[in-house]
Length: 263
Image (cartoon, rainbow, N blue to C red; front, side):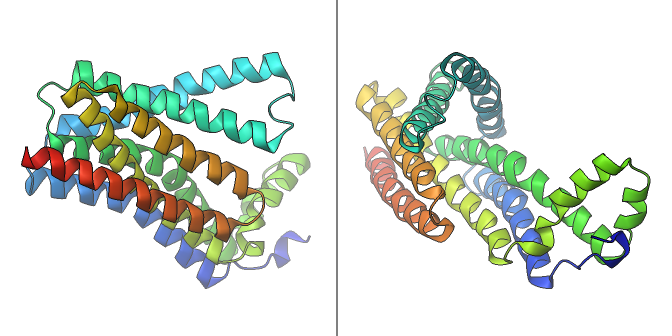
């Protein structure tokens, strides 16, 4: 492809990138401000949620993945079913255990509103890191492409690097516009999933009943297992199932929250 004749990124795709960026940063910040100023929840709960996600999901879980995959070769990654089971188990184990440890030993005198704040921080960190940074990068590249400045940027690179960069950014004009909206919608749903899971783990700590922890573990596992298993077949079907399963977890957690608040 000639660098001087690159296609432009459609306006619909750019709108999707902006929507995803707003969802990734705007929703967590909005929830933080609401819970801070309307419910008087503590900032420390939000920060703890963010730090636990980074430590347990991005650092510790990633290290275990590297070790397991180096030992098992393609035994897990070669089967979609086994990989879905493995990925869901690891995500549930690390994130729910991290949640429990933080609520049990770090966040003292934890109440319902701070469980919500913790969940907003946990899900917010995931959204900002996994989607927010990607959306910023996509918008920067889309701006370079549509302004005609990308060829000048690529001309300063060696041929192999320029081809690699071009292959990556070409998805910005070849991918359907709705995909950029799907990313934002998925993170919105995921944030509310993490809030619901945080409520269940809070009940486990508050009531000293392991059943609440295992409810959170099971809900997290089921949602992630379905998402991984269906992800290679249909993005829209995957998102529909993800929303429905998350709604079920949120409904259950809302009952647990109201029950605790009325005791």
